[in-house]
Length: 486
Image 1 (cartoon, rainbow, N blue to C red):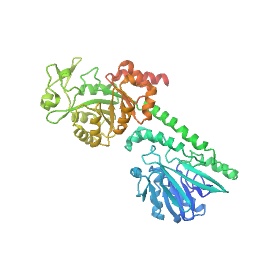
Image 2: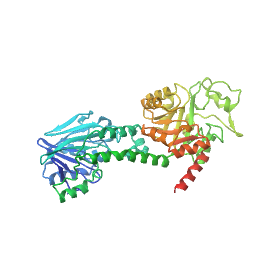
Image 3: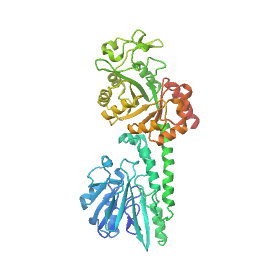
Image 4: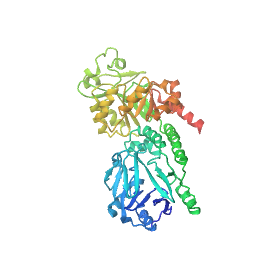
């Protein structure tokens, strides 16, 4: 026997719980067979078989499996159940990337219904937890009472942190969609809240109460307050997680390397930044006349290599560029190619911000970054939104960020429309209130134009990172702040 740590039981009407504490699964018993809502981990297969049998039903009568989203703790037992019963499976097309062992028979559309016998389930697209999360609403009847049941198909917030989203290439805008889904679900009246996980609606505890007093069903709240109270807590949980993440995974980008101390965009500057402890490097990319991608900010080498060098980088050959020396503070080094830079740094566990300084180099930059497997650790940025759009067309798997000089509704709308994940405002615009607002729009926040004074403002406001010419100074401030709060 593989019985659950929560013994199977009838919640109300024809709705039964057949899952476990860590992976909820619910059963509808209808005149035309059985329908299952989520299957759970792979080892839930045996649990579901024994739970259904203990309740007096035959698993071979399973006709339909509806799944709230594609995460393994909701779908990994599906393949075995389909092999045993031939049940038809439903899932959102957007979530196919998460599943294994089966191909959905039906893809949801927003507002569709799934019917078996007298049970009809309304399926609403509520993205956020995943791109294809669906929530379910249906009725149960008992002792002359009819209750509307509701399940939020994906209420968890840890999956909206960067570690998970980067692993699965989930756009950060899913955070905004998550908040919008909550608002949509608040419009749905729910008498009986069905937990997507057992802890959400206190499945174990309410089962015990139901056994002690079957006359009063603890799962039912006809006022709808239980449902609304659950939903109302979720935005605060997400905000708290994202604020904690901004500190735990804050990125100190050495701006063109440690450019206050060494010639910018040179190996000397990059290594200096890394040795100071920076966990990110920001640099600029241009292309020479003969097609070599080089790291240089200005259109000409004059500022870094001498006033007489007024010829544009894109009019120079790589050999001409290599003949120059960039100098600062008595130090000198060569201009470096993007490929040589990546040979030295791509293997490091740091974050990269690659700024496009020239149009029509997007595909070439994407090809080089792909060759060094930089997709999970790079954000490609520019002040020119059209550059980012072209880059995204060429390499949709990369994250992009727009460097802006102001932030208003138009900027936020255009940023989202371009599929960008990062908003890069001037440091003096970054406040705690602004960060909360921009983050709720679904963006990471990285500041530029940072001074020693605004450095503190940006970090304290909860931004996700900033580019600084003096990473040592910022890192010392972070250490002192952390020590004070310890």
